[in-house]
Amino acid sequence: MDAQQLFPSALGDIYAALRARMLELGADVIEEFSRTQVSYGAARKFVWLTPITKTKALLTVDMWEEHHATFLRSVIPFRHDKYTHQIEVRTAADVQTVAALGWFEESAAWGRKER
Image 1 (cartoon, rainbow, N blue to C red):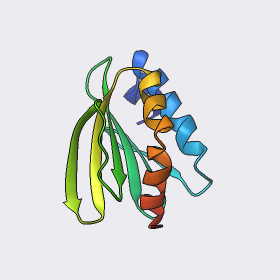
Image 2 (cartoon, rainbow, N blue to C red):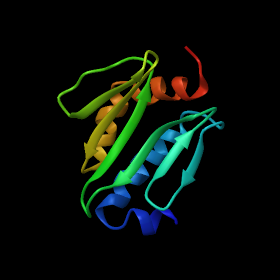
Image 3 (tube, helix red, strand yellow):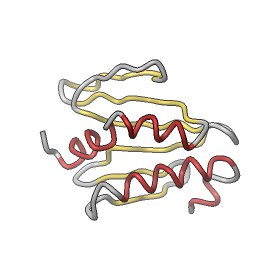
Image 4 (tube, one colour):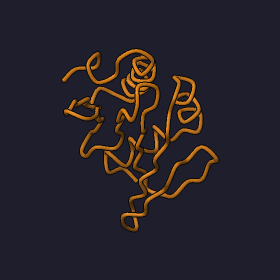
């Protein structure tokens, strides 16, 4: 599976925006494709992008603490140090909104096991 197959048409812009942000986080961030999604990780995976429809994807971001925002679909507390935030994204601007909050840096710290 590659990016063009997994994220055709409008989803390609969302993927490209997320990938650019992930690459800015450091050389230790690894991109991995599966049949249904792309993930990013360091010591452990911390961000996933999963297509839902031809125009919408689910962005999943793991962080140390629970955060709140109107655009969140859900927050799942897995344990005392892991909160999974799920966000429906429809445009590259949605990815930039999450980035502006610093959530990708926080998520990368969780992935690196750096408190």
